Image (cartoon, rainbow, N blue to C red; front, side):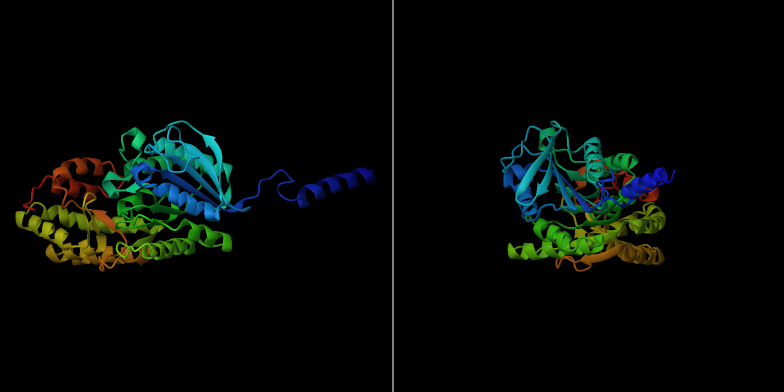
Length: 396
């Protein structure tokens, strides 16, 4: 029977010592980078998405790095391979865009569209590390992200963004090592808190992002040069590449990016929740209510349509006005711990790297925005404050 034993040992040895592919197992690549690209009017009017795709193609994928892209949401595309009548999924290779699938004309501002893309990408391209990049308009913690022109340009609210991520996580059980927003004003505490269960780091800007956006050639080349690069180091490469490319294009303002540690944003929210107790109390006094308004106007402001403001700076000013210094210091401390690095914009020297919604300029939409804000998974006390404060009229 020795010959039978020898056969068994030989078969087992063959199975165990063959390469993963030969043994029937798919090897995990080093990185899978998923880009959810809502072209919007930025593509149809300025071909900004097509320009960034070209940058991606200058580096492309490799044998152990997958760059995967979903396109849609624009009425026309400068890249002749991309259709505006259907959403498409691509593998971005070196100097080549390989079509993988056409999935019909779906609303890319919907949670289900986002969830489907993430689930498909993670399962099709298993990797040791995952990156998710949101490309499209960024309008802050109320109006959200996206802008699918083919479905009314309504944007994906933060609660919807969270829903799409949650659906995908339920199917894949995979967290992203880095979640990035290549757009304006998405480094809000509300967005970070909504994504805390689905990623390790979030890279975004509290301010505007210049038209050139991120330098994808540099970012992807950094992964090619160092496949074991950490998400933190990759985020720094992206941020530095954005600043360098902006300056080369003559853009010297709004050069801001911040990297937020998502498992630390819960402490920031708790600190804001404690400050909100005194803020709600202050609303009951007309003089104190006015002091809150003055503190808001004096803080580092990323206003316009977003009405976002630097969280730590705002808290410090409010703390002085309504005798809440202890609570304000705790916010500054937790923000400092959560922000891994903060590339400040010269226009906003007191910026800490995390913003928060606080109505100031867009008074005609205060109540409407408050109703949207109430849907957020966030501090109940702060949402209560936003609700009551938004019903107040100030002489602006």
